[in-house]
Length: 428
Image 1 (spheres, helix red, strand yellow):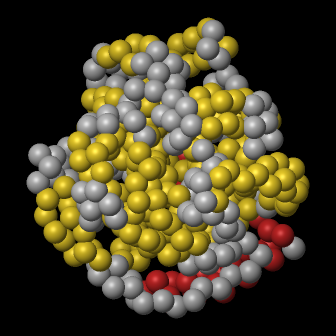
Image 2 (image 1 turned 30 degrees about the vertical axis):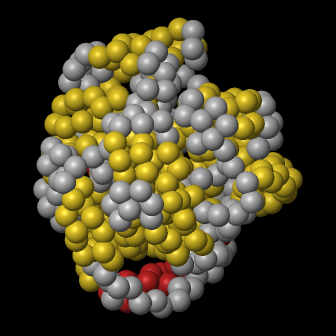
């Protein structure tokens, strides 16, 4: 396959042919945070993708990254980042730009926080499978950050200068799903990001979330979720009331449509506690490709993610032109997934012209079933031409164990005792 990348951002493109390897890796129990702070001021317009220069962020070797979800800026979200040059997972990386998608008109000021990265320490290949991690492999760094926190309050943008410590968290790999259900009917236009009111989701303390990939609605995909007011800490309870939705087709979203799903992972910073809560079935409407609606009951489930995962390459299977900011569905070489797997795009722009923000399966299936992915949802950052055989992106593929919801409390109790030992080894 061919990797097309920027040797000099926006000026000179490089091309490298590489083997199409399937690579497995093991992920460590600790996740570092890195804050993305704008290093320039920029006027932004709803739906117009912007590259925003950042205070450079250095990422250690043997790591992969992902966004800390829940929209980080009053005016929009960072849906990917750009590194200097082209590096491997095993090498150190320098992040230079945010790829920012505004959900409304406004200004990003120099010093604003436009995102937070989760940095996962990984070991690749056979060594990673067999040996895993020792505490000495995990290089924890506390960082003091001076930056602007932004949010909306009664329609007004608030900015607060903060100086705070960013550390990270320990993952339990224990999670649950929360459906994202439209709480209003609205028309959406192809390529124009929409801010849609949803049935309120209450998130427990000590949790982080990320959208569950593989598109759930035929008109588009959820890029992120939005909480009202000032951003709350991961240690606090949170409310989610809106979704940032990118349509790939024009049409009408109807109240009670299932727009997507978020993964809710239980984590710990310096301590861990989880309040027991009861969950009931949720009513929603599944929308088919021909926009027929079927009412369903969604039962609550718990799942536990395995610590060994793999990468699958997203390779274009057609030639097509792309234009900056105009989202496009692109045919890809089929990716076959076994039962009980979930996927997430691998962060850091892998194609010079844009990023994969989601994938589409050939036919709708459940997590517990086999799947075949045959399209990618691609959001261009530059005008260009995609050619068959080019790398568009990469997905992380994780195996999961799915159980009735009540099991989650036993899993968390087991992990709580493990966490105390891990914390003592890594921090002590």
